[in-house]
Amino acid sequence: MAHPDDSSTKRLRPALATSALAFACAIMTAGCASDADAGVVAVSVVDRDTGQTLPVYYKDRQQYVAGQPGHRYSVRVINQTAGRVLAVMSVDGVNVVTGQTASSSQAGYVYQPWQSYEISGWRKSESEVAAFEFSALSQSYAARTGRPADVGVIGVAVFAERAPIPADRMPMDNEQERRNDGRFSAPLQQPTPAPAAAESSLSDASSGQSANQPAAKAARDAFATRRERLGTAHGAREYSYSSHTTFERSNTSPMQIISIRYDSVDNLVAMGVIPRHRSTTPDPFPRDHHAGFVPDPPRDQ
Image (cartoon, rainbow, N blue to C red; front, side):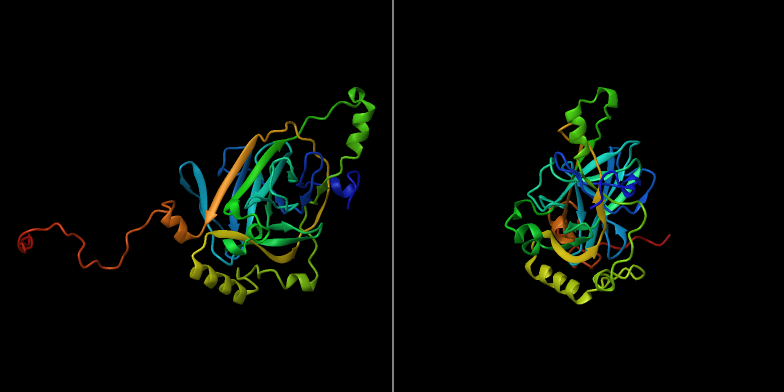
């Protein structure tokens, strides 16, 4: 792991944090803020097998997206401020870095000003994640680890960074504590290519198709048979670099909390989240209230 004073940690990066520590995965790029969210950060869900950002539906002040069983996805977070922020992320009520039952005081990603990065899986080490993959609830990571109660929701808790204390006003014990406050961080540039064995588990970016199509089809078929709610599975291992950085929260409470619920299209239609469109199939009895006999058609003009 890189030490906070290592030159690699001085590059632009995001990071994760517990109450005292922070951890980060490799970031992809820095960019301008999105208009999709007027808050501190903007959050969206991306289907990695199609490359499309999933549309958001609203019901009872809740946000929903529709996932496709068997498809991999990522959670895109954009820092829309001029300061660093910490984003603590959970999927199905589980912290995506530590695997603990989620709490906002746990590990999260640190984003530089205006930075954008997609979190694509459960962190397994400093160099690997297990891909987020839409699956039947019973096959989700949370359910398989005995925690099915909160399956179907993605959460992001956002913290601002405490302003640094001037060196001439910092007590010695606080200074020593700050030196020991190690956290993970990742460089701005694209990570180096994964070994060939790891690359085989990734999708073909040019075609947008999953590299493991039979498994994805099996997942869709199983979901269609059971009609379960959608969850997030512990997918194939993928390369994703991470290292340490430092971050001190300005407050113990999040300054913003984003919650995005998800399920299959059919389930969201049944819940009334997605409008039920009128069928284009001809209806033999579109109205049952007509009384009398067949009227003449309108006269030609």
